[in-house]
Length: 316
Ligand code: ADP
Ligand code: MG
Image 1 (cartoon, protein in one colour):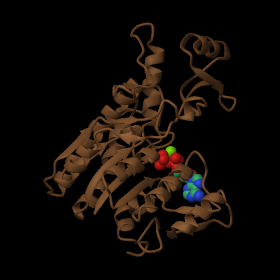
Image 2 (cartoon, helix red, strand yellow):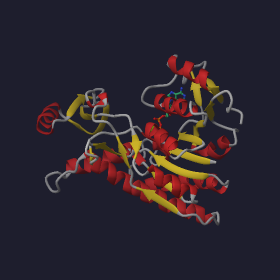
Image 3 (tube, protein in one colour):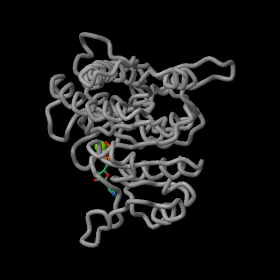
Image 4 (cartoon, protein in one colour):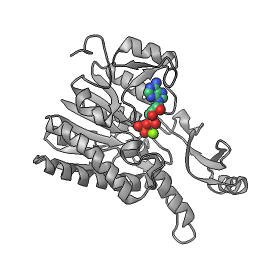
């Protein structure tokens, strides 16, 4: 099967861990050991991943050193984070495949994701990123750079950026053919570098962040994947999550999934976008899986995790 795997933040940096290169590489190595098992089982694999903490730290480096080295815009920071995470994954995956005696080529692709300038997200930025500022500094940056800044839960002021819908992943036809030719491709990290396309066909970077579950869905659709897998830090999706009456979900038919979505079981900033992406993928007659990294292999066999699909395909 052709599988697109979207790795959550946890696969690169655990909450409260210090963001050293060594810590991140060690996490990525462990994550890649699980992905290597999926490849060993004979599946064609495309990997995508988040970059929230990493791009936040790069922005901070830029901000703190701005009097020494001119700071780069957000799309460039996104490219930097995609580059270094891609490097860690590419290397780790090669090493893990090598341990299993599998000769596979692994490539990491710096990917741009097209968004629309007319996306209403540009009128209502929602995603807080980077460092905290004092009120005074925040006001100055807002007028100097045209940033939107907002008070963040009593912790200070933060820049907020738009999170537009991904429209298309540039180069997905190449990702598709590389995958079908036996390569493992790492692509569209951090949702991809946000770009807009002008009427004249020119592409250029824009300051925004793209949700990796949404861009993962686009990627899965564009490479014509059979399975879209979202690997996160919980083993399953639940109803009444975190409540005493919490109920685990294993096989969820499309209709049920939509109903649970409407009933508000999935939080907006975390499980919501995953279920939304899973539902949209399942609408095309394919299978979406949400599970933990550790359970990925079993989940592909239908023995773990939460599976979302149409009535016709859910048990196939
Ligand atoms: P990632 O970095 O993998 O994208 P997120 O933190 O965005 O992870 O999303 C995973 C989190 O979603 C879980 O750790 C859990 O706290 C939260 N969550 C919210 N609603 C649910 C639900 N209904 N079932 C399971 N987890 C949920
Ligand atoms: Mg997270």
